[in-house]
Structures are given as structure tokens and as C-alpha cells.
Length: 119
Image (cartoon, rainbow, N blue to C red):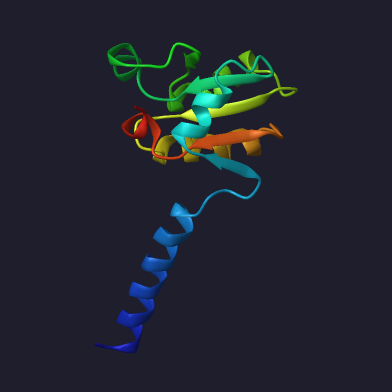
């Protein structure tokens, strides 16, 4: 294997590792921890799955703002309250958490494992 091939493979691996790492400043909680927070009125709960996924199964405290609509609908959310984000597996909610941080939301929490881990 040539040196250039090894470098390209290393860059690809690093890219995927970087994409999977939690965003700085985003809290990570489990679904068990989420259950303890669902009645906290100082938090806003956002499900970033598609409307079809949301209709199929959701947690009643969560409002549905699909990931693709987040930038345009984030104005519905208060920057004064913590935003707790969930999706199906934790991947889209991690991306949404990163976007919310970029939009100036200070307190953002991602639910690890998403609805797949919800019991």
C-alpha cells in the first residue's frame, strides 16, 4: 500500500471519527436521565425525526421539528431555556444539537440512543 493511500485512508477515518464525536458544549443524557426531566417546564423538548416517524411513536412532551426544518423553525424555541433533542438513534439529534449551538442556543442536550433506546 502506498503512502498516499495510507494518508487518504487516515483522513477518511479521522473525518468519520470527528463527525461521531459529541459537539463541545452539548450535554449528553441517556433515556433514563430523560425520564427524570420530562416534567421540567424550564426545558423545551424537540424531536427532529420526520413527521411520519414522529406520528408512528413519540414522547408527548416533544414537539416535532424535523432536522431539515430546524434552521427555519428554530425561532419557535426560546434561547433562554434548555433544548433537549431526540431522534431515532442519536445521529440526527447530534447534528441538530450542533446546529442549535451554531445558532446561539447556549443550553443544548442530546438524548443518546434516541427513540431506539426509549423504553
